[in-house]
Amino acid sequence: MALTAEQRRGRILELITELGTARVVDLAERLDQAQVTVRRDVALMAEEGLLHRSHGSVSLPSAPAVQPSGRVVGMLVPTATSYFDEVIDGVRAAAETVGARVVLGISPYESADDHAQVRQLLDSGIQGLLITPNWQPLGDASESAWLTELPVPVVLVERKPTPDSPAAELDSVSSHHGHGVLLALRHLVGLGHESVVLAARNDTSTARDVRAGYAAAVASLGLTPLPILDVDESEMDRSADEIVAAVGNGVRAALVHNDRAAIQLAALLHSRGVLIPRDLALVSYDDVFAALAAPPLTAVAPPRRAVGQVAMELMLRRLDGGPELPVRHVALLPSLRVRTSSVDAGRA
Image (cartoon, rainbow, N blue to C red; front, top):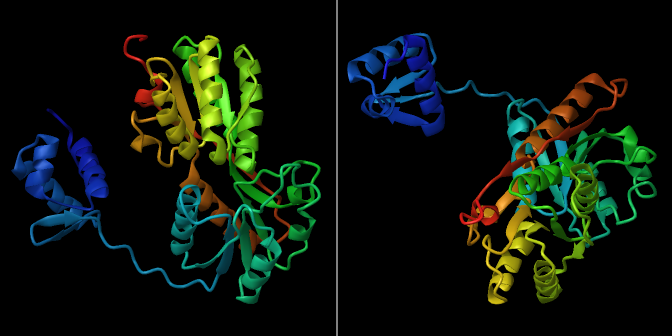
């Protein structure tokens, strides 16, 4: 394959970034280029400081050590597993680039101790707070005033404040779950489905955004509106029976929030004779465990890590620029990862 020198060196950088370290012989094989050519490219790139050569292997040059900035930022999340572990990783990565330190607090979904956790974080000496508050189903208008009165800057993480709430005065970063639902339904419409049933939780802010996004997407795409099915992990058999009934009425596509529920429902539907994707195209919302299901589930993937990174960047901006900076509400778009569960070979 004929590549220009610029193209070869660009591909070499891409491979080293992906692999971390590699031998010249392996690079030549992957690029389908002569070893002498790749060795010459690597030597020139090393002279320019783009690569590091050591004992026959090639790697990216070590980044200079980041000096601690003295910034200490607190983070309060509902859980440090599954969905939020990637958000935390994003925050940590952005903090490390500037030498900031992150102090983590956890206030479970069923807990009402956000205030106590925040007080503890404040006592630890934090200079700013990234928080995913436990807002109740009726919204945040009556629950968020205390956040605006804290003595440190606050950035909301995976929470979208309503315009009439005190929290609207705070910086925020969240996934645009309405867009994620639209992606899922548009995919199913493209496969020929004219109706899609939503089975969703109703106990988190994300779940409520998914429900609102479903209503908007159904109207936008001209789909037949269907009642939303409530998902409760203690009553999964009931949810499976409701989906089976929908299939009996001609529905051939479902969106389920979240991955845990979708994986459980897939097994329960199978035991009831409804096979995925033959009888039902199934899309999950979250993409935390969806790829591990049998069959692998098509899933909406919120940009969890990016949410954390942007949240920390907004916090650093606020700490550096002060309260006179305009407030920013950032919504990041999810992506759709298409797998086996939504595309039946016979139907296609």
